[in-house]
Image (tube, rainbow, N blue to C red; front, side, top):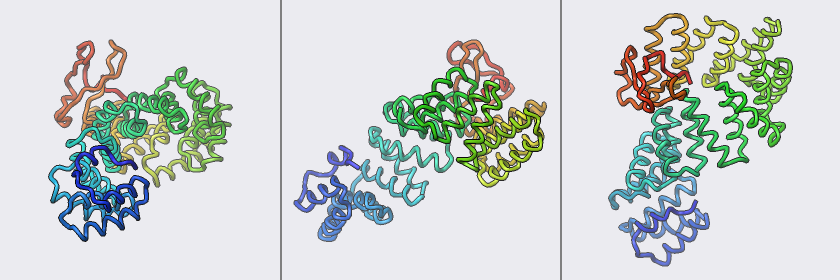
Length: 399
């Protein structure tokens, strides 16, 4: 990794020949050589904070995060508010999965210098790993504004938004990534998947076709073709694609769930039950894959199983706002409005904002809310575009 220019600016002007050799080794990614030189320098001159900073960087690049933390903390005591020290302390703590201090130092680095792209990326990943999806989406919104051409920032934000159940915004982010990285199968297929998930079949079709041309034998592209055929009511063709996808990925909850629905619609209920039973076992072992199974319950009008599934998921995957939204929708369908409001409130708390649909504007609108626990779900909110009063909870967006 190239050194951030600020590192050169903030490290003093005094460079010994040995230090210059160490810097050259770091630039050339000869990190072990750099470590050897810098260890000798710091031992000979323990009052030289510059050498400690670079030794910490070299340790980190040499995949020795514990040693990096030790020397960077020592350097931190000697140099006040050093953005590079904060950045690499954050990265080192992230490497050993101590996410609380990692978050602290990465936020500090960004505060000291908001132009350090790597610190934004590391912070977004830390927040995602710790299931702070709402905060990750908020932080990364600032990041993509500063670095609009960076696909990694857009990708992590899209993943966070998906976990929040904010599918329209996640689709926009994956669309941005697919434009920035047209060779990425992940970006292209995730974008197509979300368009199909949102029922935007006509918009999705050219994206699916592109994926099939570029990645004809890919599991993802085959699944998308099956989903496109399924949504167009071409069940026999869809079934063939889903079976092919299942032959590639035998634990695909997506394929199993769709095959269950198709089997039911084609009059084979026993086969539908077998597919669902297999999918359920997979979800029990991997809760984040719940969504397709729950959607299948709705398509099959097995609402009791649907509710049972959702209640299990919000316990196992309780940081996912998407699950709470699905639970709120099901409670509303049953007329259990108090329980629906509780689920809505939890989803808002996890998101950190209210999302409503304005029929007058025809758009989904995000309204920041700093104290989601105090949201009046018997009140109204105003559309930020047309100022129409929108009743809650009826206007809350499902997507």
